Image 1 (cartoon, rainbow, N blue to C red):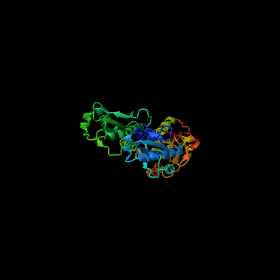
Image 2: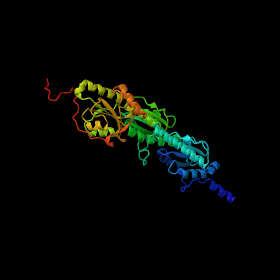
Image 3: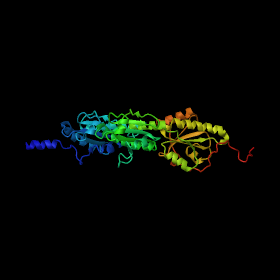
Image 4: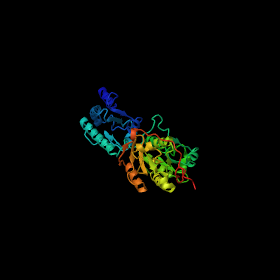
Length: 419
């Protein structure tokens, strides 16, 4: 009996140790290690008492060592961390999932269980991921990473019976509010997604869309007012409108996408600003993924009505693409010659337009007409990763001169006598 007892105790111990190349994944580190990572992950969900899991362990360790530095290999004791197993639909052991381009939608690993088969499967998945990235179909994880891992809930606003009306109903901003119960398993699964989405949404909407949370078991006035019957319930609040039930997915990517849709519906179009100095260019372009810059003909060539016609086209396009949160700027031909030169415009072909990514120091030029149709085709191609790009001249932003703003009037020939 003593031997049997010893055997039983050994069989339920964790299958992997710190000396293995298999990363031990838990409820507390899974989000940080896997979800926020750009790496490809193979994750085994196992139970220590499972005979098939025990048989797999030596090959899983071998595969982890072979793939070290290339593909991450981890393991979740799903008997201990049941919420993770439940979150990823684990019904039996061992279950192996591949966390690739879209961490919110891992794929089932269907290959063999030998170390060689596991390595082959990992390399096939890696090749597929690299191919997707080359084609421009996928960036990395398909969601926005949570900034700062210290306080995961720091951007989720705690709402109560006392502060709800002032913070939410009287606010001009958009709110997504989760009503939860602390004992609810689905609420616990949603918690890291909601926290990560809150941080990303705050950054990307410049604080104009908020994610809040109400403990409906404590804040019973709110729970009763909004007829909360199940958990989690998510509602959308916009000033002057009836609250709306959120019907989307529960991953951070789904939540962020909905929040950005709400923001773009609610937000005004970005301003089309004249480049009057370095500060305007720097602030507008550094705050945006892309900066759309037009070089318009000299005022003597178009007059005020002609220039306003070009600016009107730009404003319509800024409205059409406001969801992208790009920056929109313009300058008069000949005013910022270094900028024109770095974009390969220089001296002819006005009006001209370029889209600049200041982080990568890359730009693309409008080759079609300076019209709603021409600009739309240009920007649509850029949005889906088409369109040809070049490196900004010199690899740095050019010198920008300080100039007086356009007064909105027709130009006057220098030295002419006003009538």
